[in-house]
Length: 308
Image: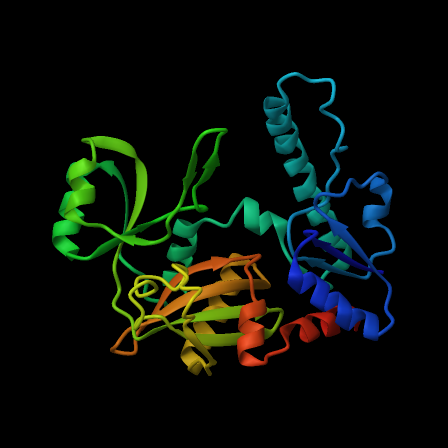
C-alpha cells in the first residue's frame, strides 16, 4: 500500500494520484485536517511513503468543545503531537529503508536557513554575506559596508491576524535610510543579507536521484527584481528549463547528502559574472509551476517512484 501524507487542497498531490490510478495501484491519502483513529494502521501494510505536506492528524477535531481557552490547549497538544509525529516518521523510514520520499521532520525541526547556508558553503557554494542583529549600530555598519542590503523572514512570512488588524509580510525588501531612521537602538533580531546583483534566478527541485532546474528571468521587472517571490501576477516572469553545470550539480548533491534530505526546492542566483549563489531550500516546496513551465512531468516521475 502506498501512503501519501498531504493537505486537502494540495494540487500536486491530486496530480500524482491521477498518475497512480492509471497504474491501478492501491494507495491511501492522509490529509493533515483529517483525524486518524487507528494508529496501528499507520505502520502496517505500507510499501512506499511520500511525505508531501504536513503529518498524520492524531488530534480529534472536536476535542476542544469543553475548553474555554482553546488556543493554549491547542498549542500544548500540538507540541506533544509534533514529538509523536517525528517518531512516526522515524519508525516508518526505519521500516521502509529507501522506499520513502520527503520529511516532516526536516521541514519543522531541522530546516534552518542559517544552518543550511553554512552547509551550502561546506558543499562549495558561494552564499550572500549574512547578519543577524538586534543592534541599530551594527546594522548601520553592515549597511555602510555593503551599500545594498536586503531583509527577509528567517523562518516564514509574517501572517498575524486579529479581529481588527492584519500584519502580513511584504516579501524581500531592500533596506533604505528611511527604514533605518525608524529603528530603535535595540530590537528583535532581524535577518539581513548583502544584496547580490543577478543575471537570473534558478529554482531547482530535487527528487530522489533526479534534479529539475528552471531559470527565472526576474531581474527586468522592478517588482520582482529583488526577489522573484515578490510576484507580478499581471506580467509573470519568463521561466525556461536550464541545464545546470556539472560542478553545480555536484555541489547540490553534496548539500543534499550533508543535510540528509532526499527532496526539496532550492533557490539559487546567477550573477552577471556567472557565479552561482545558494540562497535556501524548502524541503516541502512547491514544484508544480516548475514542472508545468518546463514540461518536466515531475508528478509522473513521483508516481513512478511510488508504484515501482
